[in-house]
Image (cartoon, rainbow, N blue to C red; front, side, top):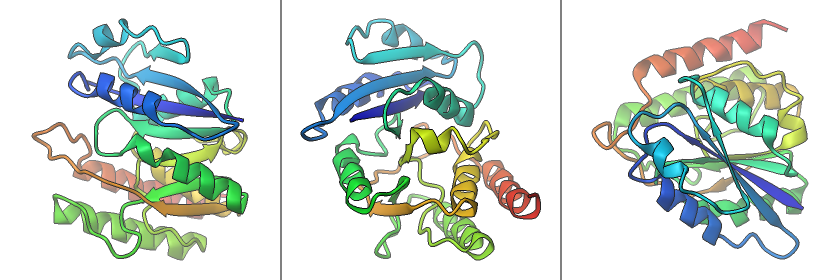
Amino acid sequence: MKLSIIICAYNERDTILTVLDRVQAVSLGSGWEKEIIVVDNCSTDGTRELLQSVTAPNVRIIYQPHNMGKGMSIRTGFRHAAGDYGFVQDADLEYDPADQPRFLGKALAENLDAVYGSRTLGGRAVYIYAVNYWAVRGLTGLTNLLFGARYTDVATASKMVRTSVFNLLNLNCSGFDLDFELSNKLARGRYRVGEVAIDYHPRSIAQGKKIRAADGLRALGVILRDRLIP
């Protein structure tokens, strides 16, 4: 079996090569091979130049012609993925690639279509900004209420989904709101979704965190849209 690891990068010069090294170092277990798909979202800080030095045979790099949003980068990665599952890995160091085997173990043990890496499972609250924590809790609660789901963290960037399922969902969001559209449509389709607790090391806005309050409002709009429109 094969895992497609999709790394979406935008101006991550300081961390992109470290993340690639860490992804390569992870052992997925017997019977698994990996392909790595890096989608650069038209970086302007030197990230593209660093990626041009990558020569590993299992790494494919896609250069977006202009900044198309993280959601579009994820969708692009899945369109090119040849693996049984696609794993979304951020290009910063907030999420640890070493968690990947736990996602695979959970998916195989329970025959799941998707596995989410939860930052709040077990009552944890590993955040720099309190507003981010409460926004995630609120949006997760609303998703569960409207779609009959049992998520604990719909906004997590760390997700693994069957590539065949992902490509059936008719996803159209292009920004951070894709996380919510994906969660909505997995719930509406009654797909089998599980969660695992993950290591999470949040960074501040000064350190490069890109999500803003407007992204939360767009997420709310997507949740309501997907509930009201068949």
